[in-house]
Image 1 (cartoon, helix red, strand yellow):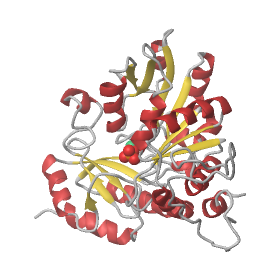
Image 2: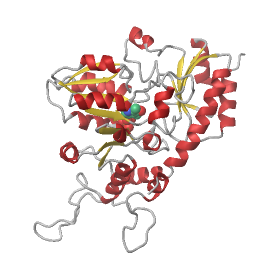
Image 3: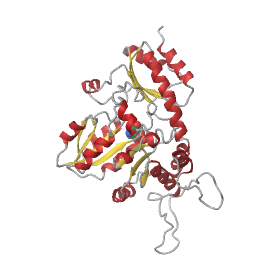
Length: 379
Ligand SMILES: *Cc1c(COP(=O)(O)O)cnc(C)c1O
């Protein structure tokens, strides 16, 4: 089945004899046993729920995995994943990582005995030099947030395979519509379903997707034991969001490409970070490993004043955290996602007081450009 069809029909929508087209919301905490020692396949909603199961099977198929687990948030998914490691284990992670993941690793996983090295994962030689006996995994975000650095997943996967390391890829930015990390050699795919999968800025969710049965079994044990599962109603909202994933991704990308080009030509914009621009340093890697470039753009204005004014003046585009939804949102990474990172370290990465990050939504491109244009005007 083609991707677009899978998004809509998922695993199988023929649920019962009623003929319901939309998957029912099984708002039940528990399920009756048909007899002593017997089960319908559903016992208790922390373990299995029919609505969530439909969602999980759909996401597993979209990512070409064998199992997907739906969590209450992306961070819940990543926290559960960290439970497969043991005190003393070492993990190599992208240095330009989602702020919440960085906080989890530094303050919670660290306390639990895990240690981390943060590097530019696109530099495979550097990654190789950090591998030691305790190293168990490489955690990659590609493209990264907010600098849009791209990692060659297949190249890192080869290094991981040689050293028996687990390769984890956070695929939130591109979604399985544009990138399938499991096909490129990743062992675990992470998603913040809150972003493009849900797509409407109305639901929090997270996913872990795997292609190995033993790994699925270990993670399912953690899943049912730690309990951060997605509720039946939120599972239904995710199912509904995913139905339009393919068309949203196409159109958001189209909007983003046009806006990126418009920004490049604006006299008050110094730099534009968009993976779809041929000038992007890893443009060729993107072309090789993805079927598209997504709709996330970061850009640097000519001054702090311009950046602040833009944030104050945008009308249609809202100044808010999060990304991937139908509504365009703009953020100020220095003050939000990267506020905890020391100034020198942050600036070395290019995250300065002039940098803004735009999640391009589904509005008309003309209206979005008009909004940016009025927000960038000199008084
Ligand atoms: C938002 C985000 C997360 C965390 O997901 P939540 O659903 O907000 O918990 C993880 N990784 C990336 C890349 C994200 O953008």
